[in-house]
Image (tube, rainbow, N blue to C red; front, top):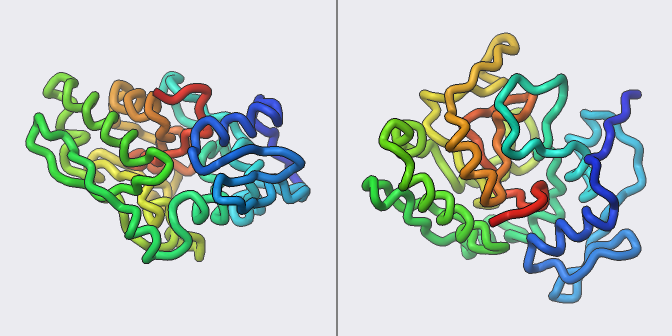
Amino acid sequence: MARYQKAPLADGKRGTALLQNYPSVKCVKDNTVHFVDGTSLPYDDGLAKDFDHALQQPDMEDHFRQAYPAFAPIEPPALNFDPGRFRNDALLKKLYGGSQEEIEANLVEVNWLPVNEGKKLLFNKRENAAAQLQKVSDELDKLPSQYLKYVKNIDGTYQYRPIQGTSRLSPHSYGIAIDLDNQYSIYWLWDKEYRYVNQIPRAVVEIFERHGFVWGGRWYHYDTMHFEYRPEMFERVL
């Protein structure tokens, strides 16, 4: 059974990454994540996992299984290098809403690209997610006009649904993901064979990353239209 190396981040720093980036987290100690409302969740389930097991049943520690290469050059990712695809549903439900009704009550409008006559997008207000997407929009609005075609026509943000081919909720279900125009994107499940080709400009990618969004174009199981608010994956979020 293959084992996958954890991200090069000490356990204490992993706890700090959760604490610093999620206002709902009070502290992380004794293998437990404690929340400001007095509830708690286990951090590490203690199981040794191969890639598929970690993807299907990740604990919070598995969020850090692979280090996200923020601001790195864009190149085809290595086999099964998917930093950010490991998502603990219990944590996401705690952060953003435990049901469709709770999640939808937390959705607010983000004014997407107002300088370039964009539109309103629904995003989760919890844990600063919507505020960070607004910062992304404000920076994208200042880019030269040749970048506009990639970011103006958004394919979607909130949609309550499972990940294709699974029973696990998509990050879109929590209102923390955004898909850019799919005519400039590729997705591994759409392809009959692996053929990584990226069109999304690095300038666009780095704006999202600066504000705590991982990009599906850095995954072996690529999804180049997809950005997802995961601030714990970064050393620093602006």
